[in-house]
Length: 84
Image (cartoon, rainbow, N blue to C red; front, side, top):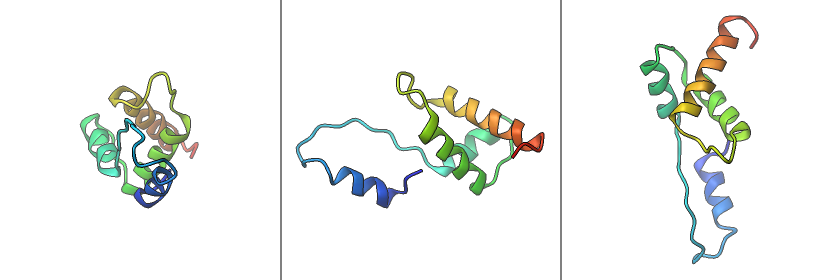
C-alpha cells in the first residue's frame, strides 16, 4: 500500500501535462465505513485492508464502497475466525 510520499514519487514519473484520473482512500475512510457497517477495526487493521484492496481489487470494477465493504467483511470474518 503506497504512502502519499510514494504516490507522489510515482506521479513524478509522468510529464507534468499528462492528464490523469485518481481517487485517494485513507485509513479514516476504512475505519469509519467499518463503524457504519457494525465492524470494529483498528487503524493498523485498516492499513492492512487498504493494502489488500490496493493489491487485489478488480480494475474493471475500481474501488468503491461496495468493494470496501467486501474487504472489511472478509477481513473481519477471517480475524474473528482466527484465520489471520
